[in-house]
Amino acid sequence: MNKRTKGLLLVFGAFAVMFIIMVYVAIPKIAALSLPFRWGTVPLDQPRILVRQYFGRPADTSVAFTDEWRAKRENGEYVLRVTYGKDSIAASYKLYYNYSLYFFHKQYLIVEK
Image 1: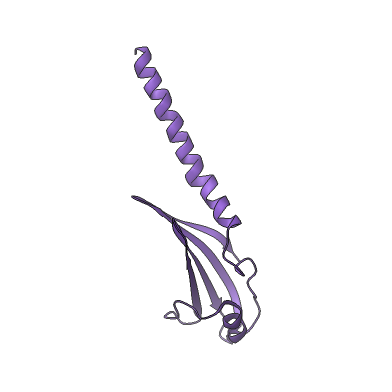
Image 2: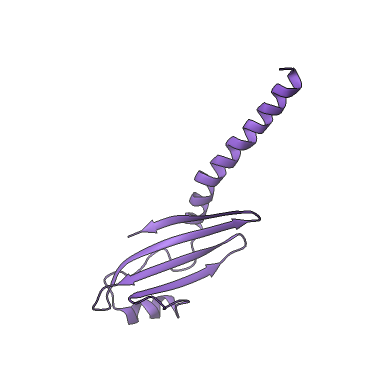
């Protein structure tokens, strides 16, 4: 291999490492730091009516015992999914970040309780 080929491989390798660090480390950390207002604390063990008063009207209620809220951002979308027990008490929640940039799409699980 000549110097030019080694240089190109080095540059390509550096870009690949930067892309991997961005996709698997930087994006999830930044998404966790920039949560929508009030989504940092979810009122678990509270009735469904109180959770809806806290977050507002859910975007999706098609699944039984589940409410889903969405907040769109420039390169992605936050999704909060709260699951209720049979007595309509908030039992658990999951917070996702759906990242999309041109051809690249990935869903990150930010918090699960």
